[in-house]
Image (cartoon, rainbow, N blue to C red; front, side):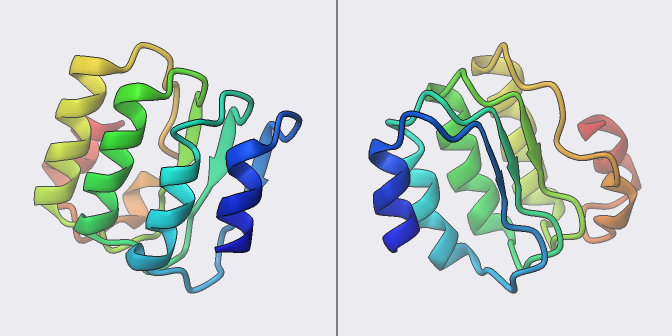
Length: 120
């Protein structure tokens, strides 16, 4: 929660790596909410955590309004097809700046093959 509070007002950090920290959606929710007001962060790595469909919905909401972030690595997380579908629809409809969701999307086996290909 301290990190989320700091990010809300931070004007200098452009890259944040939180990979492999056993983070869950209920914790990352605070971080994503703080990024609604942060227009400096360009890269965020959340790979290898325990982020699921709930996280995907929260990330979709963030990416609808934050057009500064161009890379969010969500590989190696248990996001299912439902969460991936919501995320993909939101990105296609509202976001013009996101370039990548991670290089290792094949590791998200919960999404299913078809959804992983569409996310790439």
